[in-house]
Length: 212
Ligand code: ADP
Ligand code: MG
Image 1 (spheres, rainbow, N blue to C red):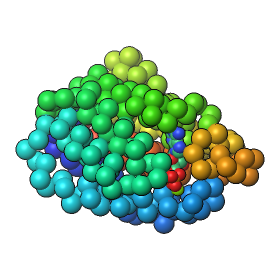
Image 2: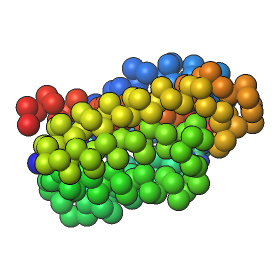
Image 3: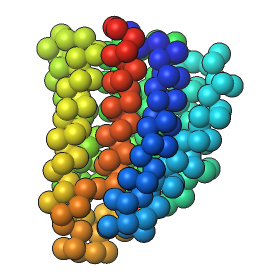
């Protein structure tokens, strides 16, 4: 099970990870975008971080919904609505829950991905966060289907996310600002894919440190 407290820890861990990688994410976006991805994400997750202490008595669905609203109202660019949608859809998959089973986590990850796919209309191979989120959900589903626990499923998910992230390097961007560069987008790692990988890695870190 993943507890409500672990979800709050995850959000704090991700906010810290974003802060520590702010310059790196912005550098990645400088190569193929407008050099604001780290700044955008850090602005949003600093707000989330400040809000977390007010959410300690809320259920997981409620927490994720509040995060969504905060991100939508504070992050500009493409990533604000996309992460806002990811958290909004994730929240509706776990409404009213105080803890999550492996199936719940799968439902959350799938719903978040579906939201991003519907909102951004990117396909696999377009060099976006979808290239990270999609294989991550597939690996989680497969591992849970083999009756393994949540931690192992998340380990496989993060490994698949990392693999998907590296695969964005040789891709030519087909969506977002990077697509304006055409072939010149080839050879660079996708910034939004990188922040999506960090999001999943932060969740794994919390699950592993809780010794589940
Ligand atoms: P902007 O491109 O508006 O400056 P950011 O720099 O914050 O926004 O975010 C860029 C990231 O957003 C990209 O690296 C990519 O992963 C993601 N992205 C852009 N467009 C889409 C889309 N249509 N679907 C999914 N992800 C997208
Ligand atoms: Mg940008």
